[in-house]
Image (cartoon, rainbow, N blue to C red; front, side, top):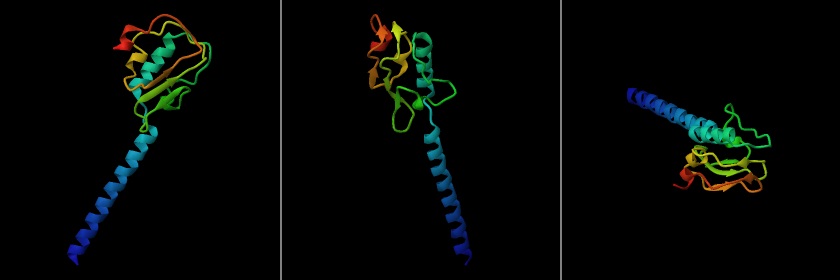
Length: 122
């Protein structure tokens, strides 16, 4: 009987640890925010003139911003689509080039001029 009680306690502890891990994992992915990518995007918007108001804010998750698509676990920005938002001038260096997981970039129908920054093509 004593052995069954010990096994029951171990089973309960194991189940509690497993459940805690599962809840932590779900919570992390629901609220994950790629901080480095977010800062790169904020730097881009700060240094790139634009005429349309975007919902980009340091206080919100960048995966929910207009024009941003993140990977499945919301840890990296994989697409930036900002067609026709009134972007103008040169793309600032050391901004979009920091989005190392970026797969799609669409900035069509804006007034962007000049070449891509040299750090972007490395």
